[in-house]
Structures are given as C-alpha cells and as structure tokens.
Image (cartoon, rainbow, N blue to C red):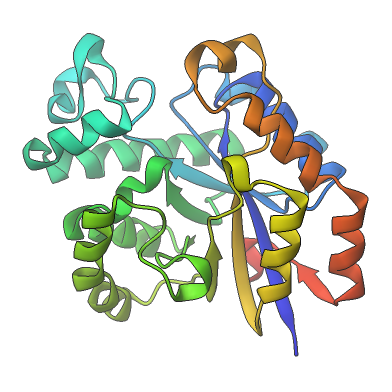
Length: 275
C-alpha cells in the first residue's frame, strides 16, 4: 500500500511571523506545501524568502475575499467590500453573499494568481481559499475550478475527513447545500486533487495525539492535512484571534516523534506538484 501525504500550511504572508513559522515547519518539520495570501503587505519579500530558503516547498495561492484589501481598485470590486475598502470578515462575507458580483470575484482572484506568477516566475501548484469561501456557493466553486483549469493547477479537495464529512468545515447549512453542487462540478471539471482531506488538526485539536490519530487513518492514495503554523508576532496578535495557537501547531509539526512515525509507516511526503 502506497500512502502519500501533503501537509499544507495555509496563510503564507499573513504576517512575517506566520511566514517564518511556515518555513520553519517545512525545514524542520513535516510541512510540504503552503498557500500564499497575495494581498498581504510584504508578500513580495516573503515569497522571495520561500524560494531562496525552501526551494522544495510547494507554493500555491490562498484565494482571499475575507481579509485585508483587494488587489484591484475598490471601484472594480465594490460588491466584495465592507467599510474602508477592505474585504469583510468571514461572517460579514456570509451576509454579503447574495449581493456579490461573480465577475468581480473572478477578476480579483485572477489578479491574485497573476501577482503570484509575477513574483515567483511560475504558476501556483494549487489553489485553495481563505476561510474556504470558494466552496460556499456553486458559482464561487465554479470560478475556482475554471481558474484551476486555466492555470493547470490542482485544488484542495472539497470533502473533509477522508471524504466522508461535509465539505471542509463550512457552516452546517452551507455544507449541506454544497453537497448538492460539489459532486456534479467535480465530475464536470475533474481537477487534480488529493483523494482525501483532513481539516481537524486545528485549534484545541492541534495536538500530537490528534495528528497521530489522523496519520493512523490515512489510506492508500494521497491525502492533504491542513495546518496553520506560525510565530505569534505583534501583527498577528493585533490582527487575528488565531495567534498563539499557531505556535502550538508549529511545535507539533516539528515533533521528531511525528517525523519518525511517518518514516516508520512508509508515508511519502509530497506536494501538489507531485500529483
């Protein structure tokens, strides 16, 4: 039995501390891949650091609609914005869903991908989305699938916990609705993606014990484990409620007993480009 595993760290570029923590989790731990937030200040330098210090780290785009400011002028993406020309919070985004212009979403996400290409000189190896917004509605999911097809890259699998749970960790009602459109769109576009996705290594469940539990459940094929390591720098402490938890995740992801388990059980660590 051949088990392959992608360990993807979300939110690269969120702050310097987050980016530094992700690089540390790759160089000294089990993280194989990350997705970058192209609308964050300093992302240019952080992507350069990643390419220099971590040439084997997979790099993708974390499509953003719920943090920071858009790359496009506010007048071009007005339906996506809350006050002060910023994206809304995740809860604010839910409130704005009925008013969102899909063409504005497509344009903004396209701009984020093209910025990644300009900065790195290469296409992203996969796409996922901040707060999983690309799975909220059939239109948003189709836009991401079309972009993945256009740029010939993989996506994060929509179904959580080995493909048996509702899509990712969406609000329950949205998750139930997503089951009505995700299978048909996946069949139509058939994007490259891992077979399974695990989102439960998070917050209070981001423990060595839980990570061992997830690893013990991995089946034949390729799985992705989502994680959020980082150092809790002042920018993160001021701007995110998920801050010290990232340092706890980082410690677990660098735990030598985890690395030994992966080696002893012949789990092959890969990135999305290896799919």
